[in-house]
Every structure is written in C-alpha cells, then in structure tokens.
Length: 116
Image (cartoon, rainbow, N blue to C red):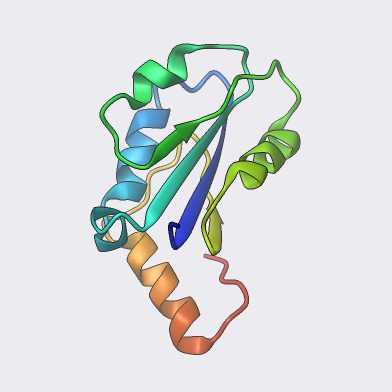
C-alpha cells in the first residue's frame, strides 16, 4: 500500500500531464515505491495510458467525458490506496522533493492535513 496517492484530474492535458506526474515522482518516497499517482481523464480520450507508459506507480482511470474536475477528483479518490492524499493539476509542476517535504511536515506535526 502506498503512503501517498496523488490525484490528478485531466482535461485536454495530453501535452502536460506527463511532466506534471514526473515532477511529483521526483522524490525519495516515489523511488521507494511509496507513491501512487491516479490520473482521472475527463475528456473522453484514451491518450493518457500512452502518456504514462514507463512510469512506475501510475494508475490511469477509464476516461469520462466532461463531468468536471470535482467528479474527476472523486473518481481518483475512490481509486486511491494511499494513507495520505494530495492534489495536482495536470498542468502543474512541483519542485524536486516536494512530496517528501509535504509528508515530512505532516508527520512531524501530527497534522491531519497540510495545504501548500
């Protein structure tokens, strides 16, 4: 079971989502197999499986067609296995080690949630 699941709703994001996922996986937790990324396509496209090929710990859900980011995040949450959850937009990039720092802060402080 992964420690963290990253939830990514994706709408027309075939050109950006791989970089977003790679930026989130650039951390010690991911290298240790402690990160699951759940991509929830919302544009009816089957392109996301191909976009994620070769990336460890990535689950691409069956695409829906324009139900919106809220329902897409909910679908991702339902598929998530991590004890901790974090959200990322499909066109965002985070700095190296971001996820390590986020989880470390939560665990050190006993926080129920951390917003950054």
